[in-house]
Image 1: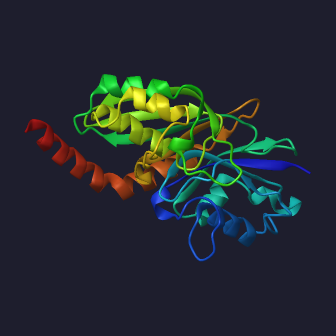
Image 2: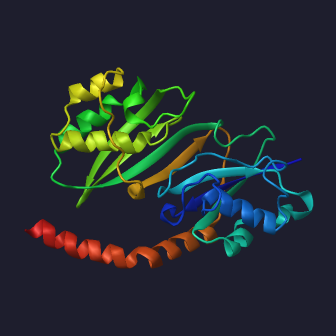
Image 3: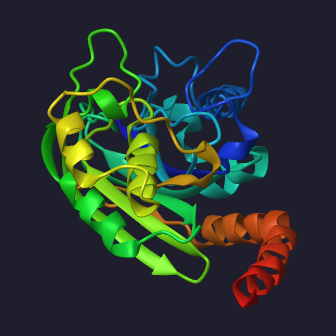
Length: 269
């Protein structure tokens, strides 16, 4: 029995997070609803439906992954063109056949998040110094909302601070992340850049020595940018990719023009 994996993108501002929750709209709930409506799966349990990353409310993704075993007679419907016709605020932009034991979360070799941080006069060197402190294996208790039984020890493989006109792009890569971990790391980097937190304080927090945790940065500026797998290649659906770009541009072009207008004015002051 073959298993399919789909690469999905979504606008997180339209959902109460990825994971199913009663009474609210979620990415997982929307996907399962469409798959069940089309008869591609009968239910999540029997189809072994799984997701790679349970992004928080407001967090978007350009590369998240779900997998499931389709009903054989309906497997031909599990293609981006058909699914994108029924989905809203979610776009299927890739597809792959995977081994029966494939799990999109546990098979992930590395996940990369990007955060878009408005430049408020940050010291770029201080931000870079702080960001590099997170690379390696550390105790992230001060930088996460811990769930019962979750190990706070995590490994970060790389961090980048990239300055662009009017904002910073903060990129974080690692195998796995705790709840709110990236957003709290971003807050620490921002605080260091504003002189509100020192590198030594961050070092102590990573050793588990702290009185207060760093609060999370707002979720709307965070995106799950990429997930890397060993030996799994997704066939990109160009039509689905174009639809995602077209829909997102239509939705946010006005905000983009306003940001450019006022950004230029603020920079000229």
